[in-house]
Image (cartoon, rainbow, N blue to C red; front, side, top):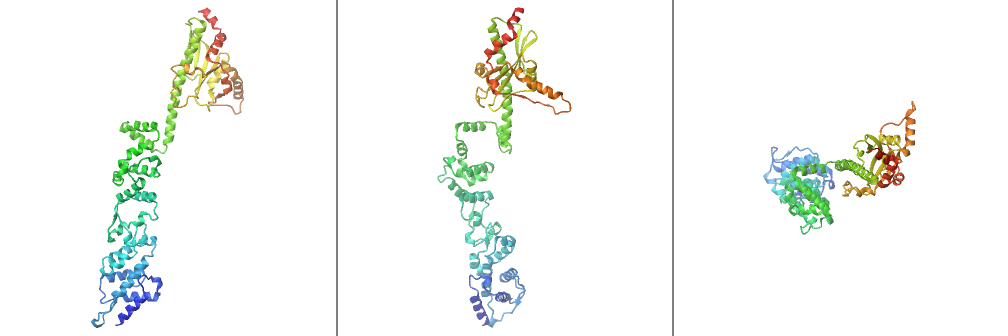
Length: 479
């Protein structure tokens, strides 16, 4: 008789959606005590186990209260227990992700009892006590099972779809998946299908360079090449990946470069791949190009010496009208102060230094041995300057001097360079003679102003000067 009145009062105080903070502490304590009544202390029933968990949650003593069953006046504890459990589930649903992260084992114990007890099934199915992958609590109908979806794929999904709720909020924590009744699954393929429909509604991936998701498309293609499982997630993207990659190159020259790479043997392609991911990639390319450029310049400079020397010799012979068997014009591939030496027998009559200017921002520089030799032989020394800056990198003519006439108009010869440098040399020698003073040392160089170079002679004018300067007619008479 008394239990009917008690249960009625409990139902009045604790509504279905009530929380513990809406009732008095004393009423809650008495309710928990009342729900701990058992017919015998050794009971290990599901309700008894649940009551112990509730006591733990509310920090109450979990000792059971034994009240033997009286057939004529049997206590109906089940109804108040259901009310208490509903209150408990409502309170759990308010817990933060931090609490869930720290108490997930406790939550698992609650679900393992409640989800198998028939009388409580409806309460648990509608309770907000199932954690998602962000440790947020949800009702189970809002969650699906994660069927081994890679974390990177979830990140792509959230970034590309830009939905209000991230995909992890809709997936149950893997260690709680067995508690779901509906067993609905989200697979990598299902996420991939949604992403692909966002990338390209018709699955054709046309005009990739104007696709707003180009970066993500290329990222996923790279993953497909590294992990075969990703081909299953993005079948249309996988089938179009070769075309997509090729279409990203706008000009035919770049496409041809790609085909050139593809035609290489696997070992070279592998080397290129390793180079491409090297953090110093651009620096390596720049240094490599510079080494090749410097070597090409060195070889071309010597070709200039040969061509210019040969041309000077031919013009001299043409001007004098006969063979000069005793004369020679010799290019030298050494750095001893001059590049071309004009000789009669073994006597050195004249020196010519050949300089090439490959960049309009760079000056013509003479090394210490070169300008020293020029100053010491000021009456028989000339500086020959070849202006190559107009031939840009990649130009076919940049390193090609098979026909010397190509560069003739770009040649200026300064036959007074020794006199121009002589004052500089006097200052250097004077400075180096002073004891206990700072002096010049090392590989210092002389910078030749462009105004002086532009005022130089062409080869024909220089040869006329050379013949008169050296009085070569006199040498002919001695032959």
